[in-house]
Length: 246
Image (cartoon, rainbow, N blue to C red; front, side, top):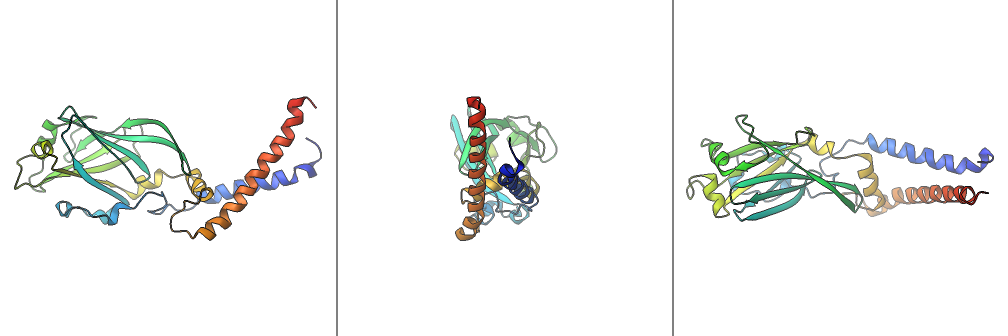
């Protein structure tokens, strides 16, 4: 490799990037660091007024239809979710896995979540109309489920189902006409577990850090670009003679 003086710049760059990534890993993850819109202040229907949404880092709400293949996808808590209602009486919830670096996202697959009722019943990965009606809590006027990934238990969320009890007698009846509301809540600890140093570095490099002035983001990103470019340059210069047999 030659004299150590030739590698001085390379060593400085490697040390700089290593220290930078190490420091990024120690940053506490706040609610809005994921780059996804913070839904806690969104317009939540009054039908969910009994849910303390301020106790969660992210919330999302919508209505579920009883179509043949109803699909709704959204981002919340730093995770991509898909809710499906198929064959008129079955509801699925999936976590979509992506490798993300800045604006680049590569789909890697999905995981089905298991539905756990408010009283602890395991409904499996398929929530049927029968279970939906059986789990209805007349005192609260709705259903509450904890949805978990058995292979990755640190990822979970709560799903609330509510409907107008003066118009419909059961959750499934409301779902039949597209009047069943759902609310997803995600805790702080779940959202924090979805982040890592590469997510933050990617946001810095591609100028996507929320609530950071572009000028400050630029001051942080430029040294990173220079260091990465120099690292690539040195590696290419050293590899070309090696590949050429020199």
